[in-house]
Image 1 (cartoon, rainbow, N blue to C red):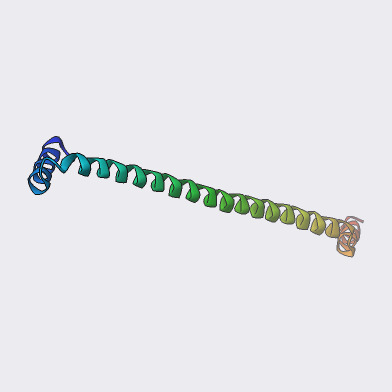
Image 2 (cartoon, rainbow, N blue to C red; image 1 turned 30 degrees about the horizontal axis):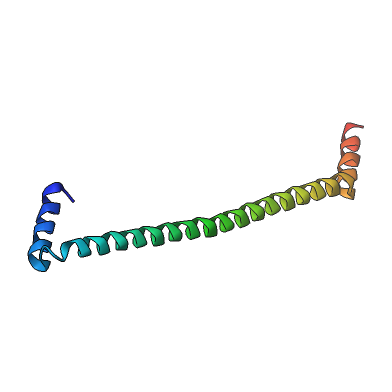
Length: 98
C-alpha cells in the first residue's frame, strides 16, 4: 500500500468507527498483526524442520545407493577376474598368440 491509500483507509475507518474507538481498533489490529507474524514464523520453522528431515533421509538413501552400487561393481569385477570366463579368455589369447 502506498501512503495515499493508507490515508484513505484511515479516514474511512475514522468515519465508520469514530475517533473514540480508533485507539482500540488500532490496538487490536497491532495485536492481530503480531499474532499473525508469530503463527507465520512458527509455520516457517516447522516447514524447515520437516524438509530438513526429508533432505537428511534423501541424503542417507543416496549414500546407501552409492555404497550398494560400489559394492556390486566390486563384486562383479571380482567375479570376472576370478571366473572361468577370464581364464577362457586368457587361454584363447594364448592360443591365438601361439
